[in-house]
Image (tube, rainbow, N blue to C red; front, side, top):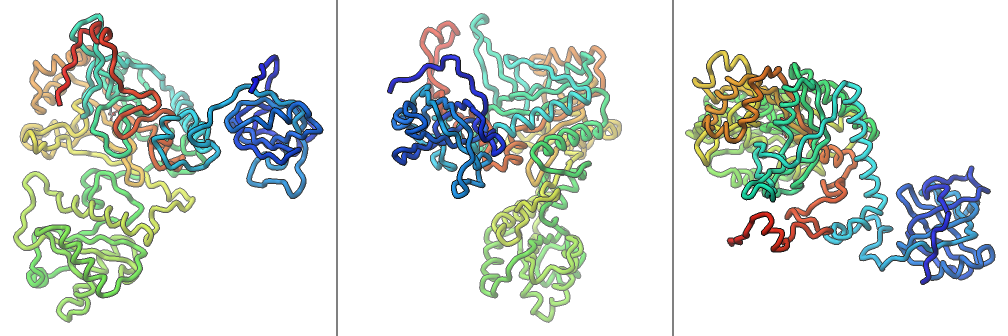
Amino acid sequence: MILDFLGTHQRTHTCGELRAADAGKTVTLMGWVNRRRDHGNLIFLDLRDRYGITQIVLDKEISPEGHPKAEHVRPEYVVAVIGRVRLRGADAINPKMPTGEIEIAATELLVLNDSKVPPFSPAEPAISNEELRLKYRYLDLRRPEMAHNIEIRHKIALAVREYLNAQGFYEIETPFLTGSTPEGARDYLVPSRVNPGTFYALPQSPQLFKQILMISGLDKYFQIVRCFRDEDLRADRQPEFTQIDLEMSFPQQDTVFAVVEGFLKSAFEVAGEAIDTPFPRMTYDEAIRLYGSDKPDQRLPPITDVRDAFTADEIAALRIEGGLPILAIVLPGQTEMSNTQRKAFVEELNTAAGPDLAFLDIRRLEKAAQFSALAQRIDAAAARACGLPRVEPENRLIVFSPRQGVTPPARDHLWLFKKAGQLRLDLARRFENEHHAFEKKGSAGDYKFLWVTDFPFFEWDEESKTWTFAHHPFTSPHEDDLKAGRMESDPEAVRALAYDIVLNGMELGSGSIRIHRQDIQSQIFRALGISDEEAKKRFGFFLEALQYGTPPHGGIALGLDRIIMILAGASSLREVIAFPKTAKAIDLMVDAPSTVRDEQLKELHIRPVIRS
Ligand code: ASP
């Protein structure tokens, strides 16, 4: 097909713009052919661009030159149309399309470019082959669903920027070619050509730079920034992802919380969602005791310790451990199970939990004369804690306890709560069609935000049998714990000034108040088993900087991709990133990573030895 030149044509409107009030105007539209319908003398083209779709009619009578061209036009050809806006006949109005009341009677058609037959049509709302979508991402991004996600992403990032700008934050870029930042993942390394044998690391976060910016007196920093972490990819992780990263001088935790609440409110607003601020808070200890998790999903009732409902005799008769909590989980809105189903369910829970735990069948207890009063007391205690009038029969009550003689693991006195937390989530997922707690109701209650504070400073690492940092090694311990000398006397009890922001059971971000004194930073490195020498080698520049008048400072980083995924109602991070990687960290469109030419390696002073 012979292609037309653009000449001096300019588009006057987008494909999403024209309405009934524009009838009679002469317009020029340009875009892609979404679909084409040939009715002989009339050929209809749906013309698509980022803004929408407009119906074009090529009538042999009105456009004797355009009509034969339209016969050869195919989907994804790029065309320019000049014509008049006219109202559609009543029976041809499409109320589902914003432009559905009009069409363009074309007088001229320019075919600006042709297209190979695409491997899938961007006109289809759902394409099941994700690999194909990623390989031909440019076609995938033509789909209105994807264009919408990209638009939301842009608007949210802009709202965050505007909010932070109004609060006096500067957006400051920090380097990508840099040294290692410890965030618990492996580094992506970049060899240096001009310095043989040396490597840059891509930043796992701008952590040290943002702290240095505070030492530099810049007071309030933020950056919407790419971070790189070479991790074994779990579902829904990306090797490069975007953070809303910020740091402030002289803040209390509350100061940081207020800023985050402010920009999240703006971000949700642009997506048409109202949220209530300030967000509730809970310490790590409370979160574990109430939800068995450091990222509680508060859309379902908490875990309850119903130990007090039991007498010593009942505990002995049931052969459960009296010295430890007896925990109850309530799942609201269940349909009742038959006797057989219930028995099988309790048995299944018992088998899955292993020999240490015993699940009680409340219904059976209810029926046994010896335990019926107990069953009622458990029921009442669990109901009270969940703010429910009564647990049975429309709610499912799961009660379990360690069996007689079971002792908790030495380094984890909260183990039982954590087990309950996992079980609570597994059951919540399994019965989600019965309790409906995960469905959006269209109110502020859809978004259960929470600050979790006072994380333990140290985490026990079973592998190395040492204490390691729970957040990162620049996080400040509680001043009280330092003053009380707990660093040495009772490391397990030391609390970090670290906090997480959680939404519906998902961690959206973490941050902390930092160590601003060099003496404390050295003490922490020592406590973490990082020798002075190693600390100097890895973070010498930073330890040096700390000695030049470092103000108290703190900050946080939130995952932007996840926030957008939630607001776009998308099912995966890949839906809201223009060019994402697969679960194997591959860019299918570019075909990266790939091998490189021998000369390139030579220049980099690298000789690859592939070990299997
Ligand atoms: N650098 C931390 C992270 O990426 C966030 C922070 O502490 O501000 O998780």
